[in-house]
Length: 418
Ligand SMILES: [Zn+2]
Image (cartoon, rainbow, N blue to C red):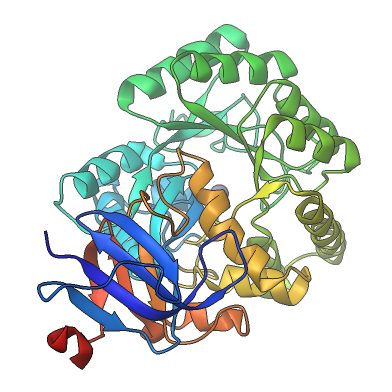
């Protein structure tokens, strides 16, 4: 089988500092060799060689908090009431392709109205549409009167598209078994308010017994569980229940971090949404609420910095799909952490590659022999300037499983001579 050689690469492998003048060899859907200074095999005449001349080669990124079917949202009602489910499915397909063409070769759903994630995952897997490898999320699972139980009872709508509302451990088990039956890979629990919800962050309408029953029901069937959780007490409840992914976790402290490290918990801070929302709402939000959001954001920056330095498995991904934060600017999130939370560019690249991949098996996310060939060629050095990743014109190659999704490079003359 003919192979593809990328030579002269500034290699960012997802784990280590950049290595100049590296070679990466792809055969079929896998990376088969990685070497620096001649340690990789030499190309044969039938192989294709791209001399990158110092451009960066890095793993395809992982978006680990993705709502493919969120579009043009102004209030939470819009998620379910603004468009029919069929329209949302088409929009989700468009967003999935946009995410892939933005350099993210894998995504993990974070809450999926009408089970759109499941059909989206299958349509991408079957080659019907282009998109990242997708881990499908369930509907939102919440309690009566919790943040996703949105329609007042007197409306008598009985909405079922956005959320499964359940109370008590048995109802949680049943709801999660239904989600698994419908095809979800990961289950989303709405544990607290805060982080975008009017319900305050320290209100936790889900009991420990419910979180525990839900987590067990998912784990019994080999599925993962993620939770929208902001306050310290609720973070600890989720950790004690063995939850896999904590979304936001703004109030994590030393005790939370210690448990996260011990249990290998993943954390999606998604603070870019909070920042973007504050920016948008500055003139619209009551002063008291604005001050509260600002306090949470400051706390979030400090928590993220502390968790990162301690070695918590932080990942990227955020709530794109509102009217003030539309789909497409996915890589701006990485730049945001560097700019506002003081995160080192190489660290945030590791969150988006190695860490994100670890969440579901780790066959992607690093550049190493044997891994799936999900990779990017970037015209620039994201360690020197993380903003280069947001410029889609600079993503000269996007490869998923050895297939070119984008390719703006021509094979080099040396390849023809070889
Ligand atoms: Zn979300």
